[in-house]
Length: 143
Image (cartoon, rainbow, N blue to C red; front, side, top):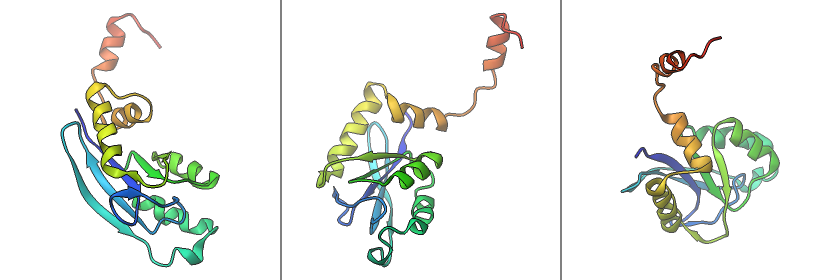
């Protein structure tokens, strides 16, 4: 099964403890069915002075390029809209949620057959099957 890149709004790299817009750091993991690995930590300077400032969002969203989702305590409507437009699914969790436990949940879903945002993320990463049109034509499909 394929793997996905997942970000967690976290200052301690072990629990989700930050709101998206005010996040001081993201821990980014590559998660596969059998393994996971911390691949990057993105830290932001002076986030407290930017509270409520939508200009901070594009930079944070840009750091999540290639991520399928970001787990956080909350995200404002503007942030959610921009994240979804960038192909990143925001996921709200309770404060102190264990990153290891969340990764284990993702891995279990990868093994059992992903659904929802995870299935969509995997499908978007899959190579395009050029033969699909040949199959449609063989079934009698016409424009």
